[in-house]
Image: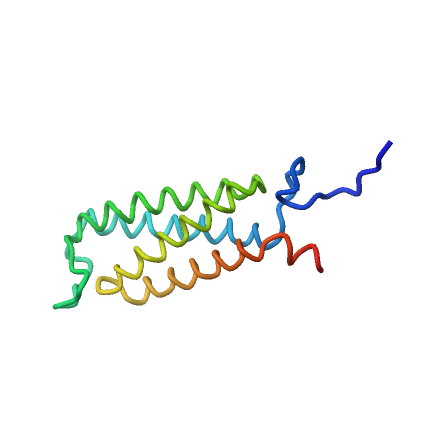
Length: 140
């Protein structure tokens, strides 16, 4: 009979324990997703809330951007919730979705530069935390 020590590494097959970095990434993805949802709603509801920089390379319709951010925000938040399962597929999807959100926020810079930079940094930390993941926690 084998004894069980209490926790298993995330991604080890049978366990549902989530590492600290994965938990951090999940919480940040849920937070970033909710903020993107609010961005999208604000852009859809009121086009005059945001000031647009002239002659910017990525100058698109603000209402269209609102729908893009709303959809990306929902997907990011759902991917963040999936990370609590501790499965490898959730980590891979989390990295891909965070990269897409990072690119969307980069193109959002002319509309709301401060918040776009904040979300780019959060997405960068999420990608780093998901790439470091369980191997870093196992060494500690």
